[in-house]
Image (cartoon, rainbow, N blue to C red):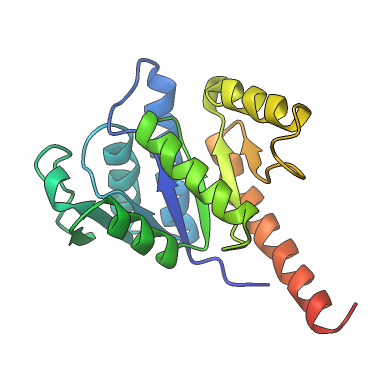
Amino acid sequence: MPAFKSVCVFCGSSPGNNPVYMKAAHDFGAALAREKIRLVYGGGHVGMMGALSQAVTQGGGKVLGVIPEFLVAREHAHEGKNDLKVVRDMHERKRIMVEEADAFVALPGGVGTLEELVEQLTWLQLERHKKPILLANIEGYWNPLIKLFEHMLKENFLYGGVRYLVADRAEDIVPKLRAAVEVQGEDAKAVASGM
């Protein structure tokens, strides 16, 4: 089975209005620690990011936070047991996060989360990477975006669709990603053997 050692998670620096979002972030972080999957994330210690990274750390897991200099104070950069990289700007942040991750997950978040997610979906569509991308659709948070993708496909702007996974519960995220990475490995073997 192909290695699945780290996941990049995009999520809000706010807790949102629904406590279920923070619980999902915590539960997912605890699952990452249990499964020994390193968290790669935006480096903040507040909101969803804080709940996620704290759960990984409390469970004895590994965390890589990547944060631009201008956000260190605003998002309370999470230091301590974590590996924290302070970078020049958002472009360097995203480049490092992509290089360090085997898969991507979008928990509920705002415009920044959406932008990071859509960039990775675009890169996947353009074949710049083949890493799985999963929408953590907690309480149907991403339903409006999924509807928009369906509309784009219907109007012929997606050229073959957009590839992503969906999990409605935090406990389903890791199993779905593992299955996707395994299929990806089988596809690579088939190509290598000329099938």
